[in-house]
Image (cartoon, rainbow, N blue to C red; front, top):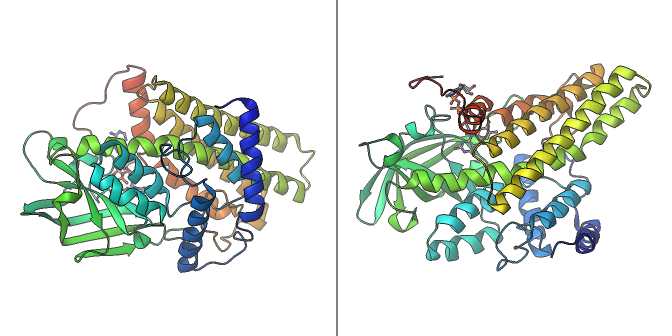
Length: 393
Ligand SMILES: Cc1cc2nc3c(=O)[nH]c(=O)nc-3n(C[C@H](O)[C@H](O)[C@H](O)COP(=O)(O)OP(=O)(O)OC[C@H]3O[C@@H](n4cnc5c(N)ncnc54)[C@H](O)[C@@H]3O)c2cc1C
């Protein structure tokens, strides 16, 4: 049931719960990475307890089975209460869960989904140094030996891999036929012998993603999702989760963070500057549009009328507006904002505009680059001429 009255009741419940439980003061804390991870785990477990961590999971899970309208209410309230983003567990609750729910065996679901709710975290080991946009070119090799696959190779850009317990891993098990045909999907234990994780230090001071080196790592055959060589299809389930629900949450968070810019306008006495007000007005309108596009995408998905390219529209709109948001903040903050203040982990809209600005570029790449999304929109949605085969970045 998603009548207006029901949604307002839910909103009141979530708001009341957050009044008591929402983490306070996390934006001012100068956290170490370890403290960040500990705080993220604690907040996730608190949300599980409250029934608001996994509204997008099926109804048999505590807090699951929420309609799209209900999920929106929960995300709006989390944003309104200025809670930290669940950076550490989003691969677990979205990517891993979508993969397991859609393609996992009953044994895999029974083993891994409850563990996620107890705080087990996952990372995604898809990209490699020469396989990003052209993911099917991946080379990490898995050779079956009895009941295990022995895996060697390198992954890169694995978000939060330094804290992860498990990894959604794409490997090559065959070289014949089209590139996609030889790919297999494994669930790897990050503590297994032969796994080395090296965090990548970023320009704004964070270490959000990692290189992962695999040296004869043994993964049980029981931890293969789908058949050997069918990993490409499984990976589509993983990727489809990323571009919808996550981007809806991010769009709402960005919309909710406009107060940082409003504060800068007031602080710098720009309330009567027509040019500034015009730019701010345009930004707010575009952020509203990003939310509306994300909403429509999810509504279409639920109604079963999602078009190829819809997810790309959501992602490109969000990442563009995020850049505009942080650029306007940096501009209006004048010299005060032109330095890299200590960074706040856990959000993309921190009000620390130098860090936010540099970080905003990551979202034009993460989950498939902006150019690749444009190719999908132009070729597959609008039916325009396809790019020549063999084009290379
Ligand atoms: C914040 C962040 C988090 C990430 N997290 C993860 C993660 O957890 N796990 C994971 O596996 N990966 C992750 N990635 C990696 C991400 O999926 C890749 O960076 C992305 O797919 C692009 O691949 P690439 O970096 O190899 O760039 P390339 O594919 O080498 O592209 C380089 C440039 O060429 C352009 N280009 C490439 N092909 C085409 C084409 N056909 N037409 C037009 N232009 C093209 C691209 O747009 C880009 O500008 C993350 C990346 C970021 C930024």
